[in-house]
Length: 442
Ligand SMILES: O=C(O)C1=C[C@@H](OP(=O)(O)O)[C@@H](O)[C@H](O)C1
Ligand SMILES: C=C(OP(=O)(O)O)C(=O)O
Image (cartoon, rainbow, N blue to C red; front, side, top):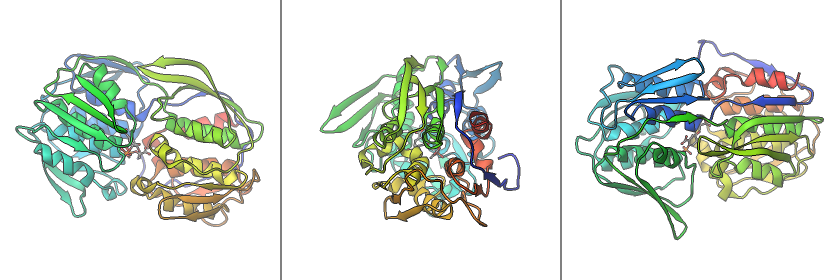
């Protein structure tokens, strides 16, 4: 974050969202483009890379371990060191707010015989790392985390990494990816078994870079196997727009009367598109135009028009495909007609903040009717009537970009506006968010 001081802001009611806009590149694909490019031999070129703080933390770490990562015009150019070629960083790897950078890089390092320290901000330093430490220890890496299995931590990768077969105990693309990345430099076959499918960008991109990776389905499991000691070939990558960033505009345009907005170039990988499905079940008007493929991922322009939304019971099986979209879905639910019930969302408690507690408190402070359960929220919507908005209170965002952006959307559909305590974390994933929101509703 650029400044030391929190940057509060009142998000005021606004007119319809209209016209066309383009959201920045997908965060998950951007991280992986930099990491895999840094392991390929030769020059990888990336357009549409998300230039948010999280991805820049990944870029800085890969530079610290020997890769060249530079921007030239609109394009990022990455010169890799080759699988097995990462150098020992001279200083701690500063991960900022980014769980994805931390867990995926721990995976990469686990099969390189180097030692590194990982540090992060106050939010990241509370998040559980045991979920990657456990499988990566089986591969042979050694860890000294802070008490509770958190950052700051030190790790030393295995000299002779051991291939493992690992069944994921939590639905987490970060844990899956950490193990697959460790498998890249591990002789033999490394296998991850996913009882619940999560975003599959690592699988698609590892294959795209030339790794030998197989995916099988058996008894409801996805079994992913990667052959180690891979040689990655540099790629030219066009990163599609981030559906998790588009989500704020999908909900805003659905809620603000008179809106008719086209969000261009949105990635619609089925492992990411749960919000579109849920909003449609609530009655949203979302039309997919010019469906195409960008960078090996399905993409479309989304035309979103205002519509009256109704509350629903959200199928917990959809959670992994919209895991980062729940904060803004809760805002949609707060304006819908009737009750929305969500459950099976324990993972939301270990994101940048406890997103169930943070959103329950934030929506209540803005005048919504919300009840927090053990693993979800139950929300009674207003039926389209504006929320009261915040009174004398500021919304606490807990260094969580998604809470900040979700409550900014709530401000658009409130009478008093919604004041949040700090907009700085928005820059971790979506630096242009405020400018785009202003432009769309001008
Ligand atoms: O693999 C990834 O790029 C991500 C996986 C998800 O985390 P989990 O694996 O912890 O669910 C998601 O919340 C995060 O924003 C990005
Ligand atoms: C959970 C998120 O990211 P990360 O885990 O990378 O911090 C997010 O962007 O909502």
